[in-house]
Length: 253
Ligand SMILES: NC(=O)c1ccc[n+]([C@@H]2O[C@H](COP(=O)([O-])OP(=O)(O)OC[C@H]3O[C@@H](n4cnc5c(N)ncnc54)[C@H](O)[C@@H]3O)[C@@H](O)[C@H]2O)c1
Image (cartoon, rainbow, N blue to C red; front, side, top):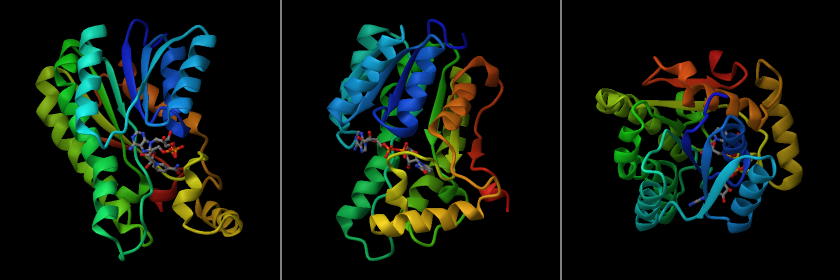
């Protein structure tokens, strides 16, 4: 097993790619903290992991709340004293277009960028204690190429790519590797939110968008979890400061 006796934490672990990542890490032997603001989703992921013989604990928190993030770091320190894998997966599509309120702007910056920055900062000591930790940020193909419908989303996801390079350099001496995953379209409950349309129109738009993807389909959350596992484990021991596109060839065009 690739993560035997390791401790991992996954934000937005209650759904989609976070859930798949938490399950994959646990199946590979890690104790996994599942962080999400949705209590029943968090509980259900934790129970699912335990039913399969894995180890997990749920933490219900809104990542916009910096005190809650500090509390998470204190809990990890108290219960394990070490964190080997931090999967900063949280993010939302947020408001589209240019006609944005300052609340829209703040929400997207706080959830998509600020939360992962501060959580990493608050967890630095336990990450150092791992003597070879891995931090994974969740960017997007919209951070690599332009996204006409969601410039603000694109801005937050592109910012994470720059952040990852800088943190990789800042943390290299502490043997903390820092990388990002940039998915294209992933078949999660959150996917429809990116199409900004009525439920009937969403299906049409999805079909048209998937047809442009060289591999001709959206990915499954488990295909992203496999890349997260690679970055989380010793298989990627010499990889730091990069963003891995996992997009079926979308950004290769
Ligand atoms: N789905 C895609 O096609 C796609 C593509 C590229 C990147 N992404 C990114 O991948 C990540 C996961 O996306 P997904 O589609 O798997 O998500 P999802 O919509 O399936 O799940 C999102 C989870 O985040 C939780 N959440 C939202 N706001 C929160 C907050 N403030 N505090 C705590 N928890 C919160 C929700 O409760 C939910 O469980 C996000 O960063 C997203 O931007 C998604």
